[in-house]
Picture 1 (tube, rainbow, N blue to C red):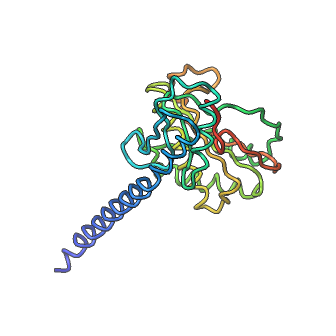
Picture 2: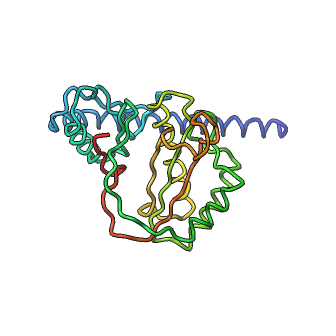
Picture 3: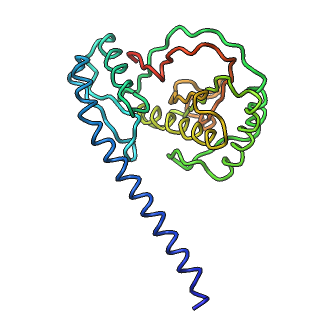
Length: 246
């Protein structure tokens, strides 16, 4: 009997993990089902018909990062109004356009990078934060690297830390944009678990629009996470917090 114990334990652990995943998925589906009519009403009140909000990611899983579809014929002012309204619905984690267009860039203030950014860039010079293929799940080696990144960021707590996700152009841009956002969010959440305050972190995906200088857009080296550590300034809404027309 004793020899069977490890098998029993492994089977029990697998069952618990499966039930946890199933329960999390059911909870996410229930949460989004409750939000669907609220989002639809918000779009209607913003005079955004016929825009629809998709609440699943590329893998079909429920997500709080909504994809707005069927907006091709809307003018820029309407797109901006609808995106901002939907982004303000409680529980919505972000808003993106299905055609792959990004939030409108506002005139951004100039910030002075802090020394922590140089320390983080030094860590990433020879190593890369990596994910499972086509996924936002971090590989084990990257968990160790993020331990070091979080430690390097500690002296600059209180600053704004921007986490930027990038991809190559090997797939459709709407999918690239969505995947890069999910990976940036995954890194943000990993840093929060390591003691970096959430209110100082900003996560945004750029898809394949900003390849590394000197590299072809299709080069796999464009699949990356970048950090910007900037001095504390009075916060203003950013394109991520308040999406614009594109």
